[in-house]
Length: 280
Picture 1 (cartoon, rainbow, N blue to C red):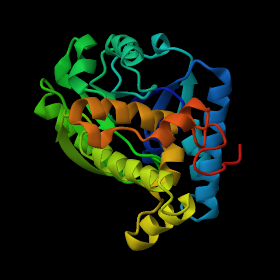
Picture 2 (picture 1 turned 180 degrees about the vertical axis):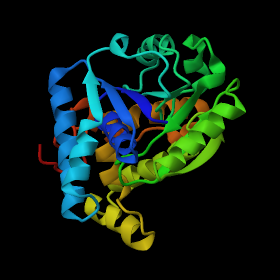
Picture 3 (picture 1 turned 30 degrees about the vertical axis):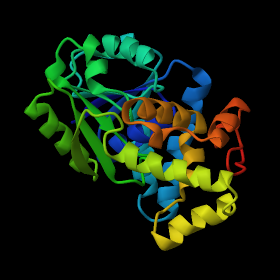
């Protein structure tokens, strides 16, 4: 796959664009907001620059990666017949429906949604050719975490799944294939640990720092569940928790501390404060 589009230039979108360009693809990122587009470009350059400092790239390779990423302001500006379009907008079904309707009209060979919890079959309702549509759940930071969770819908073809697996391998990532069940596999595992860490903090077991140290030291997690929640966004955590509570019951009910922090605008990295303080 050499001609790829990513819809959405936020945290996940920029990561997906980066790893695709790193693998050698020409990537078009759809991002209507000029400020966010400028931030995306800075992140790509800074991340590639960091790789140069660590000896992973040459300066010339980093510059070439940057040149392979193009930005357009709308889905309408995308060419038809791309190898892959990955939709990576906010986890809102109505918004994703609108974006996927436009994206499907560009007739890509493969159409994917980057979602951690929304039903693939529900999202597929607006896609005329459901055989080419599936979920590709990337993990943040995309350039560091090696897993892509592939979610097949009821009408996703075997060929589409294999294409997605080949694409993941081409990017240097591992993949797993799961059914379209709320929370899939990874979101359920991740969320239940994060919610329990929040309940521990809420009940005064110990500090947020110590809870995260327990996860990193005892279980070799690269980052603790509370810091990871800050990175993901506490508003996103809350939305996913409510969706999985509706699907699977009270064990996914969001704790009061999470509800209160979101109501107070403490969303994690994006707001500068969550369970930890974050520099803007």
